[in-house]
Image 1 (spheres, rainbow, N blue to C red):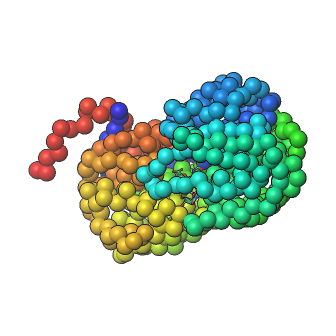
Image 2 (cartoon, helix red, strand yellow):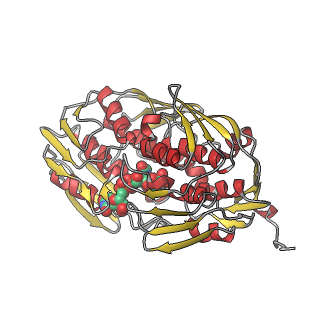
Amino acid sequence: MEVFRICGGTSLNGVVNISGSKNAALPQFAATLLSSEQSVLRNVPNLSDVRFMAEILSELGAEVRQLDNSTWEINPANITHNAPYELVRKMRASICLLGPLVGRLKKAEIPMPGGCVIGQRPIDLHIKALSRLGANIELKKGIVKVDGKNLRGNKLFLGGRHGSTVTGTSNAIMAAVLAPGLTTIDSSACEPEISDLCSMLISMGAKISGVGSHRLEIEGVNKLSGCNHRVIPDRIEAATYAIAAAITQGEVTLNGAKSEHLGSFINVMQESGVSMDLEHTDQIKVYLKNGELNSLEIITLPYPGFPTDLQAQSCALACKANGLSILTERVYPSRFMHVPELMRMGADIAMEGASSVVKGKSKLTGAPVMASDLRASAALILAGLAAEGESWVQRIYHLDRGYDAFEKKLQALGAIVERVPENKLPKSFSTN
Ligand code: EPU
């Protein structure tokens, strides 16, 4: 295993190219299965989750080729409906194969995803959607078995206790595009990744209206063709670099970022005194206006609310802000595994139910810390950049799932960070 060694205290400056979105690309790989024709996906981020997904498609019988760093060609002429447990168990997002397999083959067998460190993450809404579309579903020996031979359009409602479901909406859309008749999905998720999936499906011949809203209408078609689709930029990656600029008091231009996908994040940053210069299309310049960061007040919500996927990184930023910041989780109420690790670096954080209360202006000092999930890894690295001395972030395989070339991009901005083998981790950390 590898670890990140970070020497904090350097401000980040320059231009960073934003990669394609992980959470858009993963369901799009799955969506290529809806056609028997070849598809090409461009601007795909270079991530371990993407490689897992490519492997799963190959196991299902698709011919998958990586043409260059960010372009993949998928030929799913002959596929089966059984997703392999060994691969599926490594990545929760493989649940988004359910919709396409049921849509095209009218049957699917997918191992039920297990628990997850950021919360319970049930799939009841996915099941509800497919049942409403006429599928017969049973759970046997840990496998979700779907018989969709009677699939047909229907009215669906996808709101849950924590809002709408992103992959649940993807699954419902992907099953409905090939289900005869009209499907309406109320309380559908409207994240940019869902809109991008719809654009891809429309380019394949699907009939979808209401894209970008909480009500989608889908008129089933008999058949879809292949596509050549460019994945949207990763809004979470872009925002993470924006936080890196603010936390190190630097100036970073996010090249390729779309401000319209970042809505509430831009608002929170601006209210905290961070300048987000939106003058140029697809380019955002980020810097701290007066060198002072005001406290943050964040409540995570489905899009266009503040993304849960930025809560941990924002917590690191709050450690350097003036006064008390409050960060409340409404999507994954227990997604706070980064908090004790940030406290090891000197952060002053109290938990109140699903909120963290962060006392700002902490003197962060470098420490060995443990990443628990993808976004927590990013938060610890951001804190390490702002800390005095050396930090060692362990279990960075989480990071490789979702940040394309993170250390290389940080290095290009002037960060002192390197990836080293775990045996380089100092045996003891002296406090002298
Ligand atoms: N939920 C249910 N029942 C369901 C599905 C979801 O109760 O059937 C609940 C969840 O437990 C959660 C809320 O609804 O409380 C939202 O979950 P959602 O289904 O929207 O999450 P997801 O689709 O599994 C995607 C992203 C996550 C991101 C969430 C929320 C992908 C591959 N994953 O997950 O991304 O946090 O939406 O925006 O798109 C990440 O990138 O780090 C990540 C975890």
